[in-house]
Length: 129
Image 1: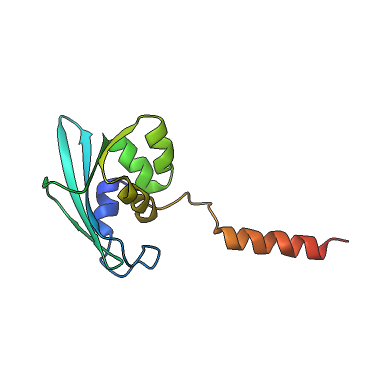
Image 2 (image 1 turned 90 degrees about the vertical axis):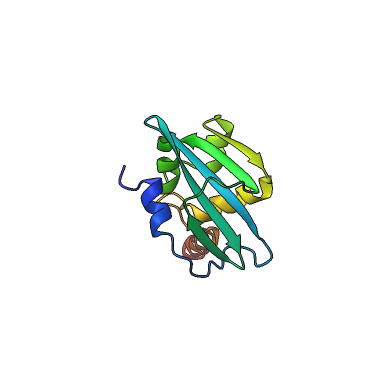
């Protein structure tokens, strides 16, 4: 895999993220299991910003999975809902924050915004006799 979750989280900048709701705030801890140890990543979300640190402190939402699952999420190869439904990750705490996590991790590389899809479909309809 090209992108690891650790690299993705290290590179995640604290700039404003307009895709996050302004009123949403909370803390998430990602526990990545692998190679006989667990890596703890702590995300603080507030005012459309995400701050990432390494900590095992308590959080509003705790997400646990194998490192390979987080790597697939970080590379866009796996959707958060898929991993949850397959029991590849476990979640404890504020489930509303889980929905934010899917906005932080990237989607599939070939994904397009729904509006772009709609515009393309309209253009095809208008162009056909």
